[in-house]
Figure 1 (cartoon, helix red, strand yellow):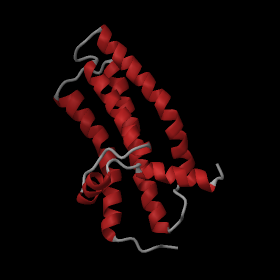
Figure 2 (figure 1 turned 180 degrees about the vertical axis):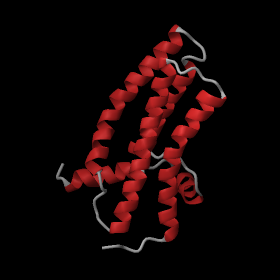
Figure 3 (figure 1 turned 60 degrees about the horizontal axis):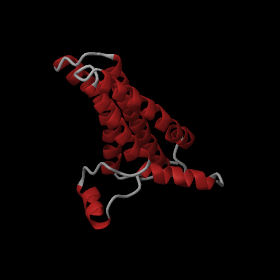
Figure 4 (figure 1 turned 135 degrees about the horizontal axis):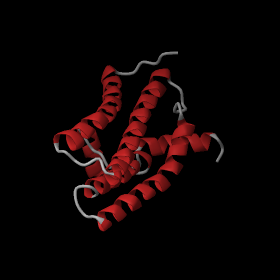
Length: 167
C-alpha cells in the first residue's frame, strides 16, 4: 500500500539522509585533506564517532521516509535504533575520554580536532535520540521560539515503539 506523501516532504527526507552521508567524505576531505589535519589516533577516533552518528542519522531519515510512504505505524528498524540509543552513550563516552586524555597529554593538532569531533558526535546523539538541537527551517524555528526545545523525532518514534511492545 502506497500512501500519498507530499513531494516536498519526500524531497526533504531524502535530502536530510543524503546530506548526512555526504558530510562524512566532505568533512574528511576538508579536515584531513585540505587543512592537513594529522590522522592521529585521537583525530581518527573523534572523526569515527562523528561519522557513526551521521550514518545513524541518514538511516533514520531513510527509515522515516519508508514509514511515511508505506503508511505503517511502526518505524522500520525501530529495534536497531533502540539498540543504537543504548549503545551510543558508552561508545561516545569512550571516544570523549580517549580524545580528551589525548588533548590533555599532548595538546595540539593531533588531538584537539578529535576531541571536537567526539563532542560534536555527542551533540548529534542528543539531537537524534533525545532533544532536537538542529533547527534549519522556518517551521522548526517557529516551534523553537514558541515552545522551546522539543523532543527529537526519533525519540518520539522510539517511545511509540516501546509503547507498542508493551514496555
